[in-house]
Length: 155
Image (cartoon, rainbow, N blue to C red; front, side):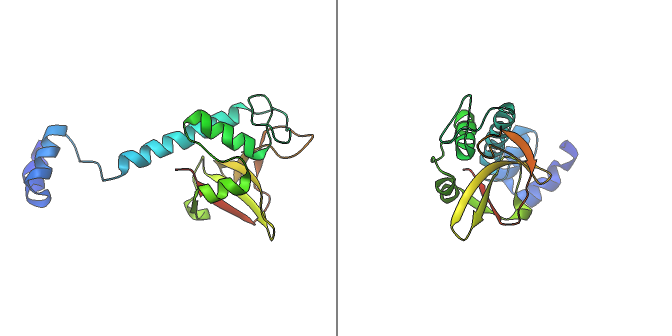
């Protein structure tokens, strides 16, 4: 690092170079800390959802022992420090919409039809989600079975 300092003084300017010298490394890009915190919250929500594996589906349930689909996402994010509205459709409107190629673990996956959003789960990577499917089932990890999905990032 010390060998690179004169070069950095020329490229980065005196103020940035002083920051680099003080911190002992490259300065973080603006917003990087916020993005890192967001990623940590999403990862925590994903772990919480996974920890509920086997919990029974119950319509309207928001945990901690039983869930419906949006109840699982609401519970997981609440425990991770973020508030979400109650229903899947409301949660979709509350998120930052992201493309399939930009999705990452912890993003919400919204299943939709001509009538709007009807189901939600938490993206676990590798085209899989944690979700509470329907009456008679339990919270489980499952492959995304439809192409009619949208992705949302909780901020």
